[in-house]
Image (cartoon, rainbow, N blue to C red):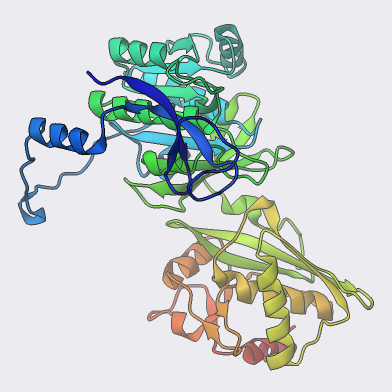
Length: 458
């Protein structure tokens, strides 16, 4: 049997070195060599021949001959979390959840595994950052005094794998993957090599034993998941826990999901008894003003399959020779583009004005359908006149001044009508084929038409 030795591989070119170096000897990249699992000392030709001689060829099949079946899901009991997951947890699936420290990841997962245990699904909670007594203390604060969830405080990968293989729980939570280490590697826990190898072993076990594993991941100061990018490619689902620690509302967003829709969100409210789902999230992001105010426009945006109504606020004020452009929740570069389009095609100038735009409630809007609502809010603040009561808008704006359609316009209008809105300004291409009861539709094709309508009606 061939011996094994420690090697260091380059994350850029894949080259190896028998010892760690600051610069890769192959591609000359700095700080790219990471410790890898030992490799065989036999030469590549003999190794290839021995592998092909021992391994039989796998049978091939065509896609038309394969019978596709729907995956079975296990509901967690938390409706908003099930929505993000695509209906529940998939047997043998691996979920990676990341978020800022203190945002509520451990709280949410502890509530989820308790619900699963109460519904007859065996669950195991592996804590690498807290002791078993600290987890029990959190459970009491959440009102889970009599929870039957199994708990294990362990960070060594080999012991965790042995326990999972022996106990065979249906669902296991690893909190967190950065604290788990393997004795096969000498690098510290949380390093690139440790995170990659530990995640690979846990993923392999989940697929082989049909155990659903949920990994908790740390994030960097930029908000991205810490560790190698390959970690996100290994798992089936990637969830991001977002929200301001000073606010009681939290968003769980699906970035990747092999078994469901991506960009789906779940909305939670942090209470004394833990996180509770918000059935009508539009109420969080809507205005609480008793009367319409200048600089406010309601947008109907899409988050996954769910239409959300969000208030877009704008403040335009005298800025002097160096005006500022600040956007919270929307893209700043797109704000500069909208101001240029507003000036060039509608004759409304903000060159000497400070412009601040904010999406209420801490929501982040990335779709271009928010352009029209942001532009109308800016114009409303600049002129000091409020938009009509019950007014909503959506649509993408191009550099030529045209208003482009937004996807699923019918669903957006129906959601707004259901919440009592009576007036909508939308792209002409999104005009409904049948009238929507209780709602008047203003169809526009260009930016100047929107500005002209505002001058006549506000």
